[in-house]
Structures are given as structure tokens and as C-alpha cells.
Amino acid sequence: MATRGSFSNRLGFVLAAAGSAVGLGNIWKFPFEVALGGGAAFVLMYLLFCFLLCFPVMVTEVTIGRKTQKNPVGAFTALGFKNWRFIGVLGLVAGVVILSFYNVIAGWAFGYFVEMASGNFAVSQNFGAFTSDWVKVGLYAIVFMFFTAFFVSKGVSGGIERLAKILMPSLIVMILILVGYSFTLPNAMEGVKFYLIPDVSAINIGTIGGALRQAFFSLSLGMGALITYGSYLSKNDNIVSSSAFITLADVGIAFIAGLMIFPLVAYNNGGDMSMVQSDQAGPGLIFITLPGVFETLGPGLGAFIGAFFFLLLSFAALTSTVSLLEVPVSYAVDELRMRRKPAVIVVAIIIFVVGIPSLLANGASDFFGTAFKLPRSSDFLSLVAGLADIMLLFGGFLIVSFAAFIWKKHNLHEEIASGYEGYENTFVKKGISFLITFLCPFILAILFVLVLLDNFFGIALI
Image 1 (tube, rainbow, N blue to C red):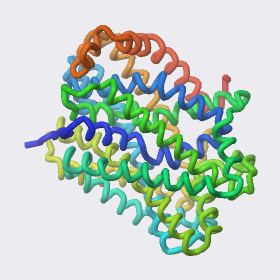
Image 2 (image 1 turned 180 degrees about the vertical axis):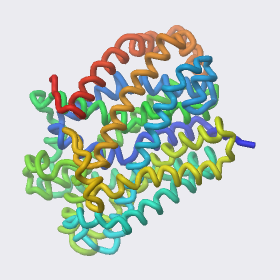
Image 3 (image 1 turned 60 degrees about the horizontal axis):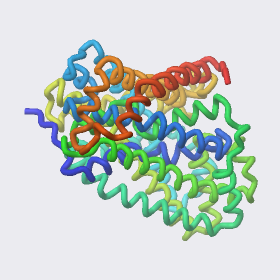
């Protein structure tokens, strides 16, 4: 008999959902997107999107999940709209696609932890050789998928919630320690200026699209993760305040991650931040630039700080891979009536196999490394990542449109009111109604088209 489980309390839900949001997207992807997007101008757009567009989508997803107590696909059937199951299917596919390449990057992070702990700083100078060694990085990816599957197999409260309660506080402490350390380094303030003082002239479609993609990616929106986590939430819990805490936690950790990274980069570049927007920008910002910083600290301290940082990155990745794996596992438990542990094993193996092309795309295979170039992608892994970004934006648009115009707002508000005393007479209700009816669908539809044209056709209309 398949059992779903539930969170033991609201704190468990908030930490688990925040862990889903906080991951490589905050500590690996956010800094290099900031670098590519021109620094503080990107940060400004990111914050705007998180609170005006992403927060209402999050509330909607969690509400649908709690109302139905189902996975993303089964949720729409449970609401009485079987023909709209495709939204859940899109989210399910997006989650599988993301985890397929996310696990590869997580394997890199775990591998760097091992390399830094042994004092091998040369790995950063030979990043291409590291990623092209498919046996080594494949082994790291297998180990990471094993840990992910292990915690998901333990269930909601016994695995996911318990992991989040340990790793989330640990993450925050580790990041704050590194922020404090980075501020003591020469030229650190040049990095802080680049990060916090915006140049509004730098805002273009690349900045806007990148900030929106990053907001959806880092908050785990449009992929069914929050519908799934919402389905384990008690009827007595306040959805709005819980979603606000999750958004603030995600934004806060991304923000302090930038305060950790850019002073380190400024120190490494002698205060010259122009380099960050050229050859040092991109995914290699973490894997190429930072180990060089750690090396300058000497073999003892450098190895310790470097290993500490990549252990943090691995922890952050694990909180997200667990949530990504839970989405298809919950589908297998709910819809296919599988027991949790067999479902975890089967789904984890399938996703790892799906991720093999991404594993081979960074030097191990010429075909997967060169045959998939588009205006915003250079290999199979970046192509899949770009496709996932588009799916998340489209999924977010569909979810708020469904809630506002198909399921109807009064049903949404009725479920939100459970656990929120006095909700009917609050400004919050009016704000959510306005955002999901007018602002979110309209802006998301426009930005989806703009990002699609820019990513896949190289057409920048702004």
C-alpha cells in the first residue's frame, strides 16, 4: 500500500521548501548570472521579479497542492479539471529535465570538495580536463544521486524534513562565516560596489530574461515541487506567511552568497571587476575563479577554506536534488501505486540515465559538446538548462492563469483562508487577486515570448 506521508509541522515544511529553493541556483548560478547581467542592475531586477511575480505563483502552487493532497499531475484531476493535467505533466517533465543536469553540476561540486580537501588547487586550472573525465565525474554524480535517493526513500518527515532541519541552518552559518572572511581581504569593497551599486543603463532583455529565469529556477517554481510539498502541508498552516518566509529565505541566501563571492573575485582580480563580465563570467566563475583565490591562502588554510566552500555548495545542491526527485516519486506513489522505496530506485536510475548526455557534454563527447549550439547555449547541458528555464516560465504562466480563470479565484481564496484567520478581509487577498489575474499572466506571457526569442533564435526585442 502506497503511503504519502506529511510534514510534522509548519517549520518542517518551510525549511524543506526553502531547501528546495536554496541550492546551486543561489550559490553557483546566481553569482555568474549577476556577473553576466552587469552586477547590481541584475540584482535589482531579480528582487523585483521574486516578490512581484514569483511570490504569487508560489502561493498558488502551494495552495493547489494542499487542496488536493496530490502530486502535480493528479492535482488537476482532483480539482475536477482532468483536461488541465498537462500543466502538471509539464512541471513533472521540467523537474526531471532539471535534475538530469543538476545532478551533474552537483557531482562537480562534490568532486571539488574532495579535490580541495586533498589540496589539489590545480583542478581549477584544468577545469576542462576535470569535466571531460567522464569516469571520475560520473562516479561523483552517482554518489550524489545515491545520497539524494537515500533521503527521499526515508519519506517526507523521516528523510526530507529531517535533512532540511540539519542542512538549512548549517548552510546559513557556513555562508555567513565565508562572508565575514571575504570582507577582510584586500579590494573586497570593489566587489561589493559591483554587486550593490546598479547601473540602470545595463538593463536589457538579457538582464531581464536572466533575472526572471533565475528567480523561477532558484524558487523551484513551475516544476511541480511546491505543489508536491504543499500536498504534505497541514490545513492549519498559513500558506501566505509560509510562502513569504520561503521567498525571503531564498532571496536572502542568494543575496548573501553574492556578498561572499564578489569580494573573493575582486581580491583575486586585484579589484578589477571588468574581468568578471568577460572571460571569467559564466558557470566557471565558481569552479575556475574561486579555487585560485583559495590557493593564494596557502596549502593549509586554502585547502580548508576551499573544501569548506565546496562542502557548502554540495549541501545546498542536496536540499534541491531531494525536492526535485520527490516530484516524480510522488507521482509514482500517487498515480502508479508504487511503494516509495522501489519508486525512488526506479526514478533515480531513469533520471541518471537521462542526464548522461549532459555528463558527457563538457569535454567527454564532441557530439554532445558542439552539436547543440544556439544563441544562448554552447553544449547539450546548457541547451537543456535553457529549455528548462523556458518550461518553468511557461509553467508559471499556466498555473496562475488556471487558478484565476479556470479553477476560479474564490476557490483559491477559500483554501488560502484555511490556516489564515481573517484572510477574507485583508489587503493580502486583494493583492493576490490582482497579481494572479492581471499582473502575473500578462507580464509572464510577454517575458516568456521575449526570452524564447532571445534564447533560441537570438532575437532581442529590448
